[in-house]
Image (cartoon, rainbow, N blue to C red; front, side, top):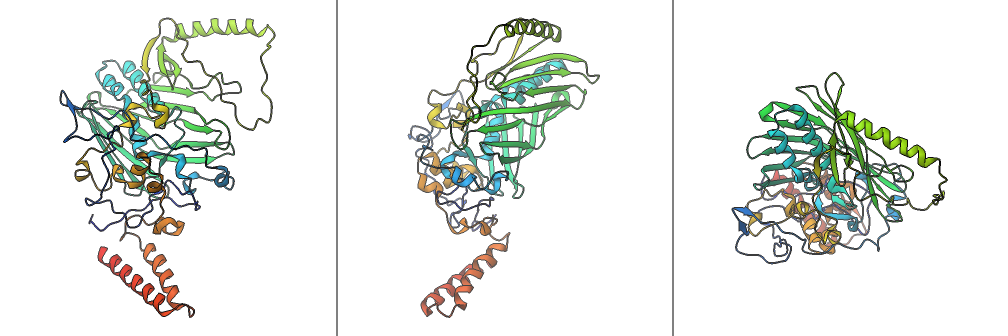
Length: 482
């Protein structure tokens, strides 16, 4: 890639005055010459001569440089009312509804609980390995709890790479397709114990009061020591009350994890909220062998923890629980009824803890979030570190890395103007241009506009001369990049 290549957002859509999650500055170059302000990137704003070290492991920042923007001044309904039933990758949203991360960095959050993969690799029995893999699959969506912000759309060819020696993995991802938008990722253990890879095609749809995200694409985990490969897909995520009311999130759908060597399968049911919110965040499932005999039961909440128990003990407890429910149903219910036609979906009340069945085994528990997480887009401690840019890193990173995007950096630093400015490619017809020299549509679109000025009789000589100069200069730049 030469230093003259320019990057544009790979998203088309309706124009918005408040503008979008797009990076559309035609004159911004993601090269070694980019000037990125790293003075605020370390959370507190203090930058030393190098990253602080402790026992050879880098300390990561614990907060963002600036608190999140308020979203109360923006009306999302003015944009979404024309888009009911449409695929949301074609819609330009106000920047205030974003969070300062690219979708490629959002995918990296799968690795927050990577210790579960290391644990699975150490287990001698296939059943125990499947338990840890199932816990990892659930933990991968735990960071989405209360995360109502939209990540920035990756540019075609955009990349993100991360090496965490303290957690024992390296990770790289890339936006490999424009339409449909597909993000591919690959990760490996630093001790050659696993490979983790896949591609994600998030299909987003707006249904009036909610936005549904269906994460198409298969995820594969390989445990190299055991020569095993596990595959699964993530559950569907739904954000409620995008128009009015308090935003809340639920995950639902069935996730099937298959061990391709042994034939064992783990079936996990992410429960939908239901009418009274009784099932909110709940996950229930089981592990079965290739003959479909249930070997292990799993239950918990994807927002909190996951437990497992022997099938016999689980069924015995559930029978007693159902017997107790039938006795309670005989008593009159004096509780308030939900009124029909509510403007917003009522946020269901959820118990803070999972009812643990005696004899259960803890498989996974979510990490505690930072105390100021609500002012940092509800990021976890792991997420806060993903866009960190230490002094000198811009000279080492690939010029296509997410950390070098000025729009994301501007939002993280609290500069709304820097992240919402629209340049030459703000028009949908030009948003398909990604790397100058690879798509001739930019040449035809821009020069046809300039040449159209030349053909108008009413245009003065000075304006014509200026347009001719711009067209000639632009054509020369395109020619030189081929």
